[in-house]
Image 1: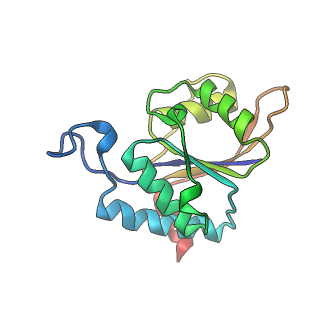
Image 2: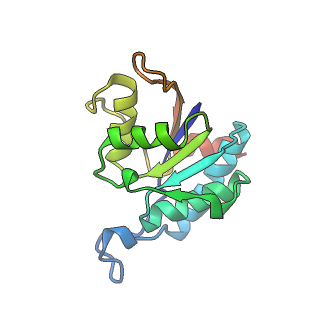
Image 3: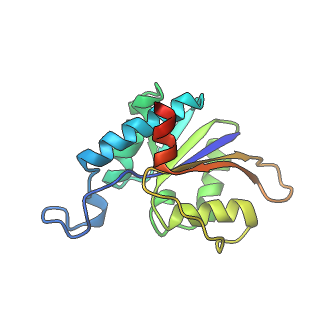
Length: 168
């Protein structure tokens, strides 16, 4: 299966009046514009999804919606999971993917440091690998959920700038 890991788009800064709760910070207009182009870049890579799972935080949800619209995926079909919260256990997300999304081309949308830890966990069985996944950045891994060895192969990791360049 193909697993796309996408970090949320640029969001309102922490502590902005009216958005004191971290979970409520929305994507900025600039973040929305960049994420729309990023989604077009992913479409140029012939990305086809059967599922999108997002953190329930506002900025991740909004990013998932932009991604869905850009990839002709039904926004109302996006699922939400606490396994994508910023400090969640990467093993819990893998377990959820294996039980609920096995065999699907899937995108997960979340936060740092969780996503880098998750990528590291899939590739090395620990969370210590240093990965720089920028806001709006994405990576593609092929995921093998059979019980042998490391479950993932990194196919690519791209910055927002690279993905926007693909959009043309």
